[in-house]
Image 1 (spheres, helix red, strand yellow):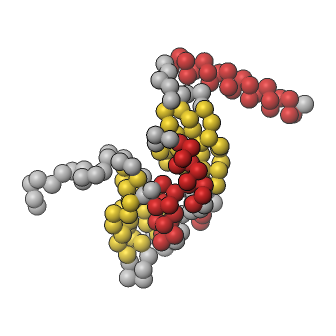
Image 2 (cartoon, rainbow, N blue to C red):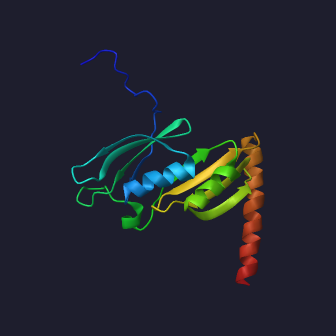
Image 3 (cartoon, rainbow, N blue to C red):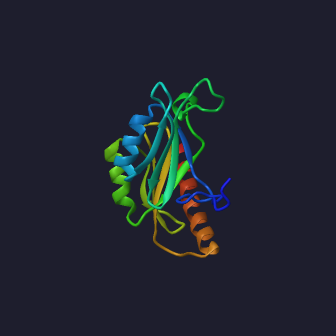
Length: 166
């Protein structure tokens, strides 16, 4: 074993999202068009399925593989009927990347807005069932400011809900 091997490979961070998708070939093309992903490597099984793909989006690594229904836990959100995870991307101009992802085939789940926590923020679902949030940080706020703004927003939401139920 080489003594100079880094425990975290070059280009990786401590956490790296690893997605399972149905039709990895289409997913790789979508992530290139939607988020400007650079495909760094793809390793295939003998029958041509992506066993492991390494992509770069901004300064971060994203990995993915094709779903393998025979392998425990290797199922896509499409097979499972949804996902409990949202992948978050910070970018200089949220509207540009958000619109680019929509043009590439993503579905808007929350339009871009100026959020109470100081970000311009929106959410999408990609064609493979994964959810993404995209944001540009606009304001540095204290925890107290965020809490107060949040209370105001949620109070307004409760009033609207009550009016709709009346």
